[in-house]
Amino acid sequence: MEYFLLLISFIIHIITLVIIRQLKVKLAEPAVIRDEINQEKKEIEELLAVYLLEIREENEKVISALDDSRYSREPDKQKADEVQDNNVTSQNPVNDLKQEEYKSYQPPMENEQPDVMEQSFAAQVLSLYNKGETIETIARKMDKGKTEIELIVKFQQKNR
Image 1 (spheres, rainbow, N blue to C red):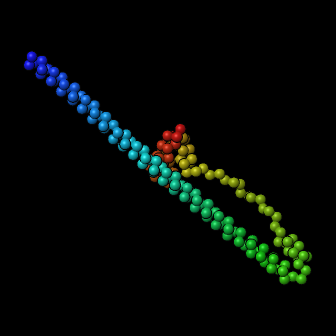
Image 2 (image 1 turned 90 degrees about the horizontal axis):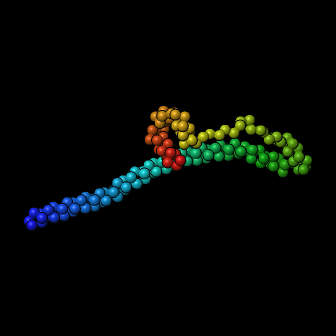
Image 3 (image 1 turned 180 degrees about the vertical axis):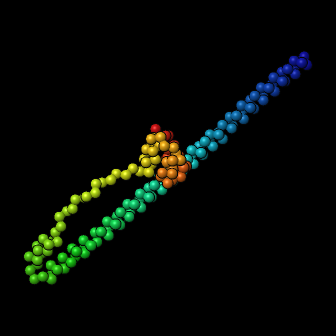
């Protein structure tokens, strides 16, 4: 009888240890998932930072282009003001106005330079990557960091 009770006690202990082990495994799962989520969150933050820098660069280019176009238009406004001043001071404003218009008329110039379409930084990286270039060579060609290139490639692969 004593052996029988010892056997039951051992069986109960083994069952208890198995249950405790299962609970420990279940409690460890959320920690692993939390770590994976934090890692993905960091990757997304880094990628968004890269895109933010790219957008800032593009905005600076647009602002500088707008400033250049403003400076190039200011002389035209000054010429128009001079023509108006001359017309006001003349005795026959209608005839003088027509003559000034004919003298100052310049036909519209055609754009000699065709519009150039440039790929964005991310598109250039993905194009090189799809051609078989390694991440290191792409980073050297684009003069950017290796991790920056890796993030762009990873983000694109996740979106597919």
